Image (tube, rainbow, N blue to C red; front, side, top):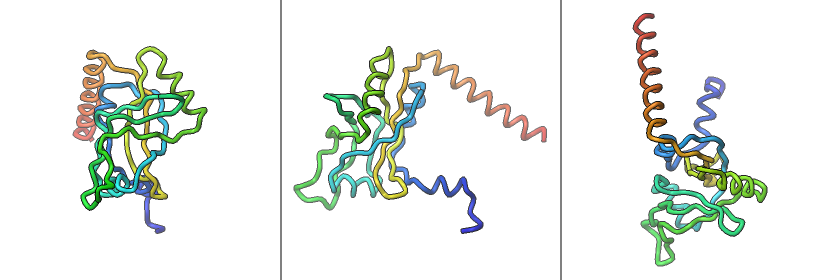
Length: 162
């Protein structure tokens, strides 16, 4: 393993299951938190096959706990009648202090908890990355797109010039 690059090792550490690209387009991500999920056996098996979607999901505090709503984990094909419900609310595992901090952040104007990525960590445990986000206006989205295009053009010009 002496010939491996450190950056590559860090990237290989997590196996990504699902990513919410739309969240980065629709929101300014101000803070990120990693949380565990309470899952059933068939949900974990389905995640290992890569059958999940967090595009339209969101997290919210309810009765002092943090929950993930509207996330989709497909039913496990080889599951019996004990199979899980695909869109059930799932409890997120965080320390009480972190939950209180996120609940206070959500109470501020325009803040929301948007799931960014669902993955297995280096120990094989399913984790979800939650972003404390502030909604973008339409002109913010256009400005972000303009700056991204300009950066791309600058890089192209620099490559051409040498």
